[in-house]
Length: 237
Ligand code: ADP
Image 1 (cartoon, rainbow, N blue to C red):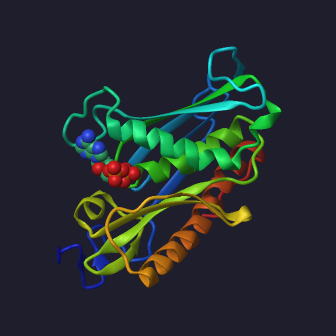
Image 2: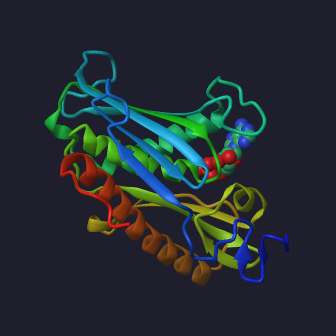
């Protein structure tokens, strides 16, 4: 502690409220019903959505599509080689990502079907679950799944006693608090909230407010990415 913020600058030169560079592309995997690619800081993540496809397997619902989600980190996504086997962490993250996306989707239009969301992290840099949610929501829109709103996520936290937005890997590991939050802004809903560390109630409220402000910016990037594919729009910058 004590070296993550120096003269108001973070380890990567950002101010406390700055997001890392964010780039989203839509339609990156042609075989998939919907797909996306995100670079959020040094995170590089592909998402492919397959389905809804008819299924009579055990666990399929008569009322609605069942969504399955697989978050996977490639063996070369971290400094130390990561085992290709799904870890307990990846199984948990797959589940929280599914829970974060599901409230946004209108799944009762597709009874007796399965919807698969595959998330492959090629390079990870802290906040990979948040970047995965942001990218997966765009891929689901690309697949034409009706939705109430796009979902976007960001990790806020506390490092060297200061609240900061969009933690990088070092801040995630060495900071005091990591708080990933996902939003459905139109519905004023939070669909994921996890906290590692401790905040006072006031700090917590401020952190969620900062995350919400970041989500507004991330949603713009999601909409621009979809606009480029579907409306031939060109970015302003
Ligand atoms: P998130 O990526 O959502 O912040 P965590 O807080 O669990 O998820 O992990 C923080 C970061 O730690 C990851 O983004 C990744 O860079 C790194 N990490 C996670 N699992 C491993 C692993 N098995 N080996 C090395 N680094 C890892």
